[in-house]
Length: 183
Image 1 (cartoon, rainbow, N blue to C red):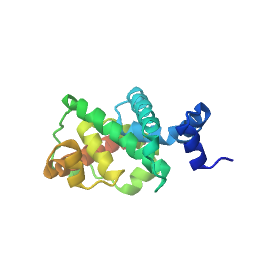
Image 2 (cartoon, one colour; image 1 turned 135 degrees about the vertical axis):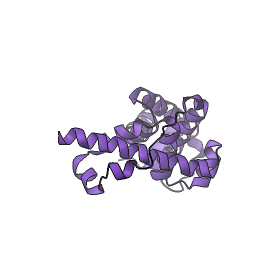
Image 3 (cartoon, rainbow, N blue to C red; image 1 turned 90 degrees about the horizontal axis):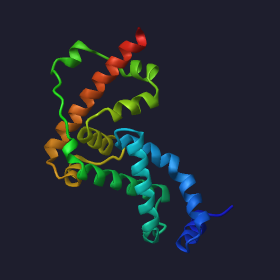
Image 4 (cartoon, helix red, strand yellow; image 1 turned 180 degrees about the vertical axis):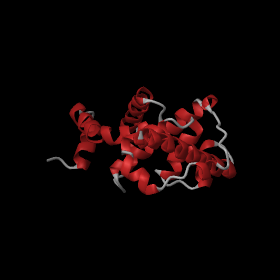
């Protein structure tokens, strides 16, 4: 069995089998990342394709420090950020009633026992692009609001506000889904 560093060296020499090995080893994991950042599966496929093109173009920059998977994921997330920046005209805002939470209480145990991960991912995909981007960067990538603000060219307060709004929208969507499950 070839080690990761051997496969990378073969890629750098132009070995197509090595390219294929890396792609097949990481494509499904990175597709999950792409789906989180995209509106639909087709957009996710485009992000994945562009991401792996960049991975192979910049493979010589991987220094073997840290996780290769983490390095690939960072490239994929950066591709998603670039896509978002190019398509900022897609921004949509939703108004959510401040008393929504009181009218529609839901416990985390209800969510976990009745909703599958795929369903939650589908709900995240329904978020408006700005909210989806901020939610993913904060919740999944662990970015701080200042980092998100810098990446997206917004204020830190806007990042916090949009994360709050994204969570409210997800709460509403989960509540609606729970009603459908119960009936």
